[in-house]
Image (cartoon, rainbow, N blue to C red):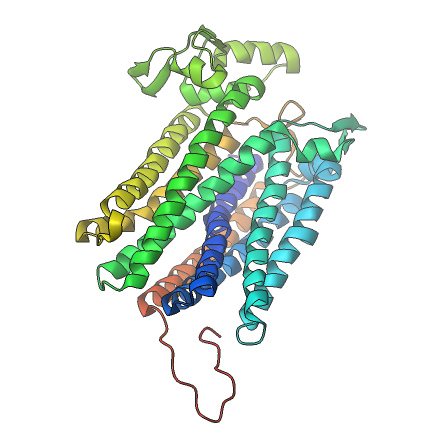
Length: 447
């Protein structure tokens, strides 16, 4: 093992850890905004209680996401300076937009929402949480546009060994980004829906209060709709892989040689004839390229080297993503059917909802492993190899030290996150207390 291997491990670990918070922030912000909107429109007290209850969970998760994201960015200068030098001119614009527009919008309006209870007009205060939620999703768009450029670089030219952006609009409207954004954001809503379902399942086992039933039903609807979006955009992503990243597609299917009318491998030994060609090209007779034939072509194009990603990780992460994602969406559809027409949640279903927390998280992590490991050995497809991206002069000991420190730090943050979330969930909603007669304004129930 050398410094490159450890640097890859460090970036992979911190990225996966950070991504535990990102999808929950994206989806939960919109869910909280929806709850507050329901309170604004109906005046029902339980919607206000739910808004503040899930609002606290949203804030805890948002704070952890910010901390882990900052640490992650330090690695670009620490371990990946050659990569940063190559992509800096291209990444500068979308990342600046993410920081100056989306993140500042999100954090500013979130601050107004936190401290604006009983201080801002009701409609203005409602607008602040929607602005914060929109900012979260805008942030995801700019980050994913930058990430999509690494898989399918467009709107640039290479000058003096560095990528120079020639068309910002091409970068922001990259076909890979346009397919990736709704897929990833949709999966974020599935994660958030699963989180809410698990919390509601916990409380439905303890009480039959209408507020938990209404929150669970809303989360079931959100999860089912988001799951349909993920499935639909997954079809678009498969077609783009066929055209733009054939090696990733071949590795995900364990396909070694070019095959006309390629079968889809469910698991080794079980295949569905011609389904892979149908999914990837919408043509059951289309030819899908294989890893070994692509390896030979890439050696002729780029020179000697191994251009195949890890076949085991890519193959199984694809299947884990599909199985766990379908299980989450299937649970949501089943829950909607069983609780239709105001039917109560059966106890077994409430227990099953607890599974909605880990299932989508495993699915999105597997999806990112497929996406990022499937791109290897490139950091920028066709332009910059991962081996050429690492910082020169960084020793194995230095990377090992930073990896150890980050692991210990993230472990401590994980414990703090779990303790804070669990304590708040067990505490339940706060009940309204009558204000002292001397007070003119009711104090905030949340802060």
